[in-house]
Length: 424
Image 1 (cartoon, rainbow, N blue to C red):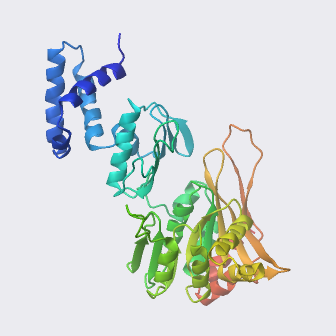
Image 2 (image 1 turned 60 degrees about the vertical axis):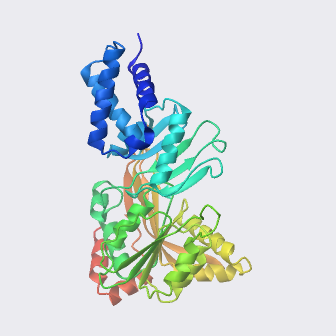
Image 3 (image 1 turned 180 degrees about the horizontal axis):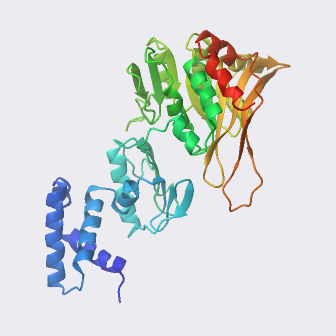
C-alpha cells in the first residue's frame, strides 16, 4: 500500500502537468487554493483514488507552498522555534531549535524540485543562481540570511543555509533570564555602551554576536547620529537618527560591487557620532579602527574569534589585508588605542550561549597588547549530557581603566560601582 508521500507525489505530478505555471503564480493565494482544491477533488474522482478529505487539504497546502512559497521548507520557515535551516541535498535537511541541531523529516521529491526552490529563494532576494553563478549569498525580505550552493559546486545536491531573522529584539535583561550573563555584567556593559566605549563583540558562528550588538545599542543616546554598515541588514536600532547601509554584490557583468570597506570610508564623510559595523572580516578593519581613533568613540563591531586574544590577532591580520607594509608594532599600537573593550560570546556544546569573558584593552607593553579581564565564566564540572552550569566571576580591577574614567565623565560611576559591589 503506497504511503502518504507516494500518494502526494502522484497527485503533485498530475496537478503540475495540468498547470499553467506563469498563470497560477500570479493568482492570489485564496484563489489558487480554491483552484487546486477543485483540481485535486476532480483528480481523486476521475482516478478513483482513496484520499480522505483531511489529506486532500494537506496536499493543497503543500502545493500552495511549492507554487507560492518555499515548498517543503515553508513549515520550517514558519516555525518560530527554528533559528537555522540547513539543506544538504534533497534527502537531508537539518534544523537548529533552541541551540540544538537535529535532522528534520522534511525531504524534497527530487533534486529538480530543490533546485527550483533554491532559484525562487534567490529571486525573492533579488539575486540569481544558475550554472554560471552557482553561489548566492543574500538577505530575504524578512531579514533572514540565506546562502545557496548548487551543482556542480555542491556535489550531493543543492545546499541551502537559512539563518532566520529573529522576530524578538533581545535585551540584556532577557539575556540575564536565559543565563547568558549576570546582572553585574549587564550593568557594566550598559555603562560601557552608554559612555562611548569602543567595543568589539567576538565569538564563533551562531554564538549570538549580532544579538549582543543589538542589545548594546539600546544604551546609545537618542541624540547621536549612528551609521550602521552590514553585508545583510540584521541590526535593529531604536534611535531616531540612524542611517542604515548594506553592501551590494557585483551584477551580471561582474561590476557595481560595493563592499564594507567602501561603505566605512564613505560613512566618515557623513558626520557620524558612532559607526556600527555588523561584522568585521576584511580590509575594512583598517578604516574602522582609524574611525575609532579619530573621534568616533562608541563605535562597535563583531568579528569571528574564539577568545579576546584571538580577536586582537584577527584584527591585526585584517589590517594587514588592507595595508600589507605596516609594521606590526604600529598595528598593535593602533588596535590597542582604538579598541576599549572585547566581549567574548560563545555557544557551548549544550546549545546555550554565554558571555565567557569581558576584557578591557589596557595598552601595549613589551610589544604585546595587554588585556585586563573584568568578568569571566567558569563552568562547573558536569557530565557530557548535562546542561552547562557555572559562575560568572570578576576581579573588580577597574581602578585604572578607561571604563572607570569614562563612567565618571558621563555620570555613570555610581552604576559601575554598584555592579562590582554586588559581586565582590
